Image (cartoon, rainbow, N blue to C red):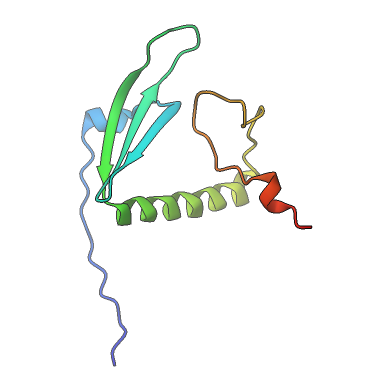
Length: 110
C-alpha cells in the first residue's frame, strides 16, 4: 500500500484592494447543517451602529480546518513572541472576539 501524499501547489493571487486588509474587532458566527457564516464587524465604542465589513461562508469541514490552522499559528506566534494576554473579564465582555471559557463547575470534581 502506497501512503505517499501528492501535494498540489496552488498559485494564489492577492489583489491590491485585498492586500490592504480589513480591520475587525467583532466576529458574529452562525451555522446551518451545511455551512458556517462568519461576519467580520468593526465596532466603535459610543457608536450605536456597527457594520459588517466582510462575510465568509464555508463548509463545516473548512471551518474546523480554519480553527486548527489558527491554533497552530497562535502556538507558533506565542513560541516566538510570548503568550498573548487577554485583558478584562471575558465573561462580562459584550463585544469583540470571545474565547471559549470552560465552566468552573465542570472543572470541579467532588
